Every structure is written in structure tokens, then in C-alpha cells.
Amino acid sequence: MKGAAIEIENLSKEYPYGFLNLRKKMSLENLSMQVESGEVFGFLGPNGAGKSTTIKLLMRLIFPTSGTARILGKSIEDVSTHQRIGYLPEQPYFYDYLTAGELLDYFARFHRLTANDRCVRVQRILRKVGLETAKKMQLRKYSKGMLQRVGMAQAILHEPEVVVLDEPMSGLDPLGRREVRDIILELKREGRTVLFSTHILSDAEMLCDRVGVIVGGKLRGVGTPGEMVGIQTQGMEILFEVQGAAKRFPLLDRATRTGERYRAQVSESELYGALDELRGAGARILSVAQIKPTLEDFFMHLVEADRAQASAVEVTGK
Amino acid sequence: MKNIWIVATNTFREAVRDRVLYNLVFFALLMMGAAIVVGQISIGIEQTVIVSLGLAAISVIGLFIAVFIGVGLVSKEMDKRTLYALLAKPLKRWEFLLGKYAGLVMTLAVNTAAMAVGLYAALWTVKQPLVESDAYVFVAVYLILLKLALIVALAMLFSCFTTPFLAILFTGGMYVAGVFAYDLRTIQGINLSATIVKLVRGISYLLPNFQNFNVTGAVAHGRGVPGSLVWHVTVYTVVYCAVVLAGASAVFARRNLK
Image 1 (cartoon, each protein chain N blue to C red):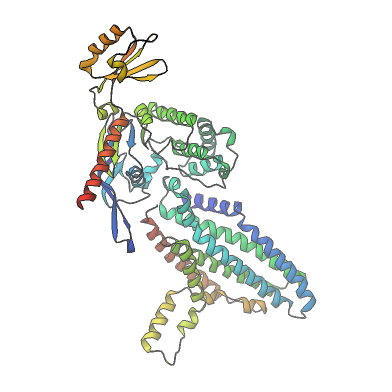
Image 2: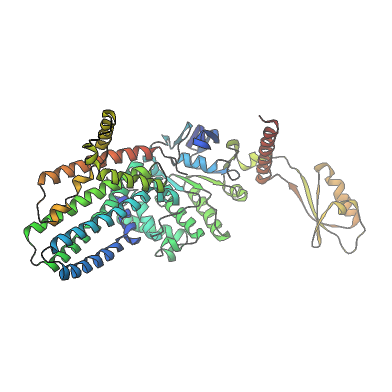
């Protein structure tokens, strides 16, 4: 790692609401975190957790109530840093009277690229996101998935050092998601820093060097996906088959049947006893695997804890 | 400046592709109809009728474009969220605002120039040949364009801090009040206290004085327009627009996007 690409210190955002905007809702509370240079950082959280708020604050689309942030060592107030940043908004929408080629050329002009350079890059990037054949179609005729691809293209067109993607897999079919994953991995190989928000945890586990989990406007943890979920196993899973009409035995009653196979979960201390029981019953043991908590388990645990806390506050009135 | 130009040219392209310039067809039909009718029923006042009608049409069509599209310049971008990706580029918010403004003024300039050509064509149809004093029609068109530029600036200012509906109301209200600005300055009410008269006069100086922009009466009757008036109105428009756009930029610079 070469130092922090994104540094956030005590960033908070309150939104006024209600009559005369007198009431305030805290959308983000004292967020502090760093994204290291060259890493892929996943920003996880349920809807309304504060992921998009954080990203919008970083891109100066909204302004913080308090706190500061720096990207590539410069304050986010310095718009010139945007030369080195790419951004994909959540559910992007672009000028629908333009074609994809025209839109990308328009955006590229802000990066001071020559006409020739713009033309070459636009062709290349459209090929990369699979829109080469639709480049002359006006964006008003594009599907949601195609707009997402255009959004991805405009975010990386100028080869930025830092790429911020707000829900990049949203609205994409499995093929599109795979392509976006490949693009993110390619950006990583090229040494670029990627911060992306998502609530698709399998994507985060697959792509991220580190993840940050945000729930209810508060950061609940930052670390590698492995660190986040812990390294101790939650038990063992045995996959086995029972030949013919075998007699009943205790483990069979606890197992879940899928077709001809059975899946039983036991604790580590019960494992050898369970294997002896299976051998004694004439069962064929197909596999034995550790059960590790997934990022999804960790995530759900945090969300449920947050909801429980919110309910407790509501009940006590505090 | 380069960023402003990039946004301005795209705004112009947007107006063209959204068929804003289609109003020219309506104007052309109006002028053709007027030329035919005036040629048959007016004796000796063809110029007055054609010029008055033409300049009024240029002004009204321009007003509609300036108010409705001017208000939508920023609010539409915020509502549709097209602004998100754009402001993530190395583009300052005031550059975006001035670019949008310049783009619509460019559109209005092309639109107004095309209508002026149509007006001259209608004038040529009813009275040939054109004489030197007919050149003042061009001056009247130029002053209409300045008026429209000022209205676009006001529309943008209001759209930066309120809803599009209210922005249209405020801009329309400012236009109507501005048309009567001179009357407000010379107000002499029998039942009005001195304080109220002073207050009204004070407010009238803040309003854009649109009376100075209207030379239709003089031009329609073949009279000239003093150069000093053209110069005065030009400087007035530039200064007023600069102040209004500076205000709009200041408001927009701190505006949270939804």
C-alpha cells in the first residue's frame, strides 16, 4: 500500500425536514475511515444506511454538516482533483438526447483530451463495456442496464487514479455484473483505487481487499472480509448418502435431505462421533467441510442489532 | 472559460434536439399570414402593422422560451440527476451555471435572429424597397434579445433556490413589475404616505427596468433609436445580469443535490 487515497475524518450529515425544516435527521454520524491507495474497498450497508450520502459528500454533490475529507491528499473542496477521480452515480441518468458516443465525448472534453485522443478512448471504452454496437443510439432508447454501462464508461474514460462507484451492479443482469466485476479487477491490476458501495455481499467478498460496514449512519466495522467475519468455525457440515432403505439413526433425523443426499451440521467436538455413527449405519460420506460465517451473516447480525437498538430506544422513549 | 463554452455548446445542442427552434415555423406562418392580410386591408400603415406584430411576436415567443426553459436549465438537471456525473468532472458549479446561461442565450440569439430575418422578409413583401430607417428594426430586435438575456438570468436565479413552479411565477412577476418600473419610480399617490412612496421608489430601482428595452412604437413608425439608449441598455443589461448570475452562483454553490 502507498498511503491513503481517501481519508475521511468525523464526517457528519444532517438533513432538515418537517415544518419549516426545523427538525433534523442524522444521515451520517462522525464517519472516519481511510481507503488505501491501490485497494478495492467495499462500502456495505442496507438501503438508507448512509452509503450514498458518504459518496455524495466525497463528490461535493452535498455538503457536510461537520467533518472533513481528502482525496489524493487534497481537500474534497478542491474540484481540480476531479481530474483524477471517476464517479458512477447510483441509478445513473444522462442526457437522453445524446448518443453514448456523444455523451462520453462531452464528458471527456472536461478532461482536456484532444479530439483524436477522445475519439480513440471513447471507441475503446464503449468496446470494454459492451456498447460498441449501440453507440449511435440516443440514450433515451437505452435500458437501465445499458445506462449503467454508460455510467461505468464515463467513470473510467479518463483513466482516473481513484474510482468511486455507487451501486455499480445495480440493474445489471448476471452477465453485466460479471463484466463490471472484471472491470473492477482490471482497475485494481492497473493500480487504481476503487471505492464502491453495494449491498450485494457476494460481490464484496469476491472483489474487496477491505470492506466497511455502515448501518444507521454509523460505521460498524472496517477490515478484510475475513477479519470482519472472524476466523473461528461455526461447526462442521457432513454431506453423505444412505444406500437403500437404511435403518434410522439419530444423525439422519437431524440432517436435511436434498435428492439422494443428506446434509448434517454438527459441532467440532461432535464430528468424530458423527462420522462413526455414519460408518456404523453404512452411509457413504461424501464430504466434510468447516462452516464459516459469511459476510452476509456478519452484515445481518449488525443490521438486526441496529434494529433491536432502535426498537429499544423507541420503547423506552429515549 | 473553456468549461463554460463546453457546457454552453451542449445546452445549445439540447435546445436544438428538443425542438425548441420549431417555434420558428409558427413565427414564419404568422408573418406570412400577416403580410398577406396587411397587404389587402391596410393602406399606408403596412410597415407599422408588420413591425409592431413582428416585434411583439419575437418578444412573446422569446419570453416563453426564456422563462420556461430558463427555469428548467438547472432544475431539470437536478430532478433528472444528470448533474451528478457532470459535477464529478473538473467543473466548478459557477462554470456549469454560466455555461447553461450562455447556451440558452445563444439559442435565443439564433432564434431571434431567424425571426428577425422573417420579419424583414414580411416587411419586404408589403413595402419594396426597404429603406435605411428599416434598419432600426434590427436595433429593436437587439434590445429584445437583451431583455430576454436578463429574464434568463432571473429565471436561473429563482430556479436555484425554489421549485420550478414558483420560479416561473417569480420570473413572470419580475417581468411584469419591471415593465412598470418607470411608473413606480414616478409614483405620485394622493393617499400614499411619503414613507410608502420612498419605499416603492426604492424597490423600483432594484427591479429591472424593461421600459427602456421597448422601442417598438418608435421603430414601427420609422423613427430612429438614439445610440445612447442602445449603449445605456447594453451596459445596464450586462451589469444587471452579472449581479443576478453572481447571486445565482452563490446560492447554487451551497445547494445540496437530492
